[in-house]
Image (tube, rainbow, N blue to C red; front, side, top):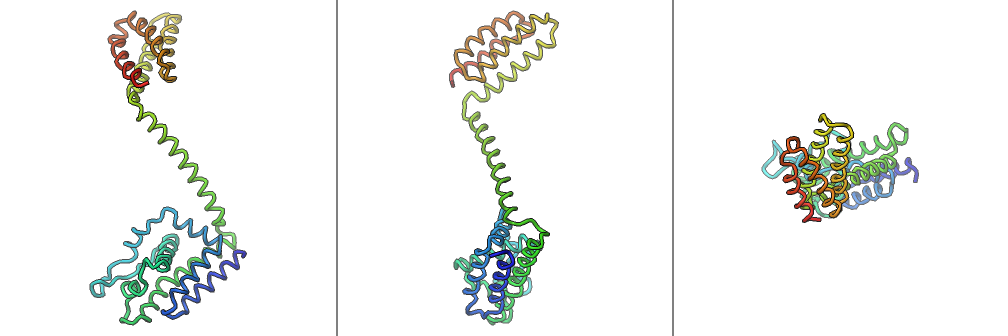
Length: 270
């Protein structure tokens, strides 16, 4: 079916529900849901509306206790946005069809008129189904006329964006977890901070450029060994680092001892 045929089929099935008697309403609700399922465009519209939709919160917001009727009676508050309206009413219809909502009790509680089933059902049709029908019709007509992006395309684009975001978030979480699971994670971070501070001191010192380069080389060797997780490389690089910092005790006071403590934790964990 094309989009025009899909819309016409949906309208026909919804009008059958609107025009039907209470006694066969459950059959007509099934017809409306089947008309939605038969349309790729409508399926995409409802998928878009249901993405991020909190049905439980919406139920508390739109099915409320009545201010005017007796205890135990409620009322339906029409959602102000088309997105919420479609998502909520569609979810209610699905629950009615699945028998998770007792239809007669639902009508009696939230669409109570004068105690009669037919009056309550008419209120349900006027308050819930007609706005639902008209909102779907308006959206589909906008899609057909090109005023709105095709919801199938929109949903696929949204899925791709969401997938990319989820993959990026999962990768970041994996990296964080990997680091946190390593007992030496904090020690490695502390070592990087120390070595960066050492390089800053060397660059700002009055040492000859040649001597600065030698110190920087020693510091970088230790940093690279840490990044590689190379136990032997770390040990060898630390020996060079220890003699280098001890040669300038005022600049690197207590450095060798502090670094040795962190390296012990790291080497024990590797």
